[in-house]
Image (cartoon, rainbow, N blue to C red):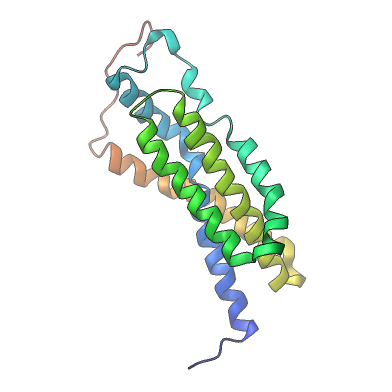
Length: 183
């Protein structure tokens, strides 16, 4: 069995952290996703001309969840370790998406909790934990490593934006339903 030295391990940690940032940056494609969410909710009868603009609340609690879990993640990392902290944060993040799938069937306000707050909770803990662990492996290059991770965070939305569009609207149909005076 090959023993992984710290020199190689730090690169595995960096690649894994970039992959995590790539995935947790996905909520920033919400602007694209919103068109499909509103269309679906209108189809389900939860959205009409009287609540135009309410859909913007869905992503509003995301920064609050991110801030809360970022704060908690520091002490959690010390008590249970990095791996368990990342496992929990990624499970919470994924649960937020899964619950959003379910919550879209029931109301306009449940996605605020599931997509906005729960995904934010998962993102915050993973975000700070990966930056912290990578900065410990690359002590002489902390700003460069942090920049690389933040770039991964941003690129996730850019790449998954295309994936979501292709999956949800492969033929690129435009919305054709009128809500009040808005098309």
